[in-house]
Length: 274
Image 1 (cartoon, rainbow, N blue to C red):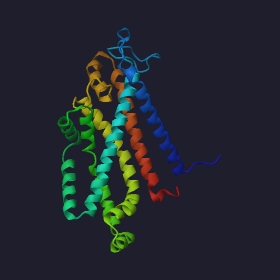
Image 2 (tube, helix red, strand yellow; image 1 turned 60 degrees about the horizontal axis):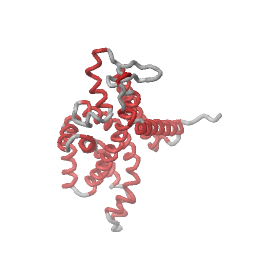
Image 3 (spheres, rainbow, N blue to C red; image 1 turned 135 degrees about the vertical axis):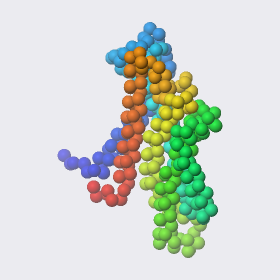
Image 4 (cartoon, helix red, strand yellow; image 1 turned 90 degrees about the vertical axis):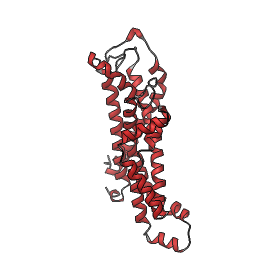
């Protein structure tokens, strides 16, 4: 049997991670109605074969609630990470190609956003946008683009000195065509890697802000809501209410982080012969 090389192993790992996360997302969507069902004859049951994650004080299935909450967090993470990455791509290219004034303005915005703690900034934006789903998405999306924007800006500054781009400029090719035909293909690896690495930050900050009461409303089975509600019951010995949702959140974040790191190494030209 032929042994897989390192790159093939990375590809299989990425495919497996994507399938697992997609399965959790779909399962959470399908189980959302069950996650909202109450059964007061089954309240506060410890983990058992019938209820692997136990039940809460209203008899709700904690496995269904955990999967529904994790699915919601993944979907919010995907949306906010995509918006943040697109903002970073646009501002990074604009900063490096539209002159010193634009570069100074973008750099000032980056320094301003990075100078405020992420959680505090997400909370402020969420409150300003009315909290709820819209507030959380706006808060997370508008506070996580700075690091990737700096990376893209630095990459574009280096690419501007490439001989083929200098030749295109001398031939009168417009900036739009240079960006579309020459810069974007080179920026794609950094963009994809940054996009995936934004997911764990987005998921954690969404859960954190919701846990603190500035995010998603309490009627939604979000991970932050589940963890926040379970805090008052931990002293009574109902450990399963927080343990399993917390572990699932950590596993999802670690899976995204590992996937992003593997993708970065996979797209690195130096790893072609591994």
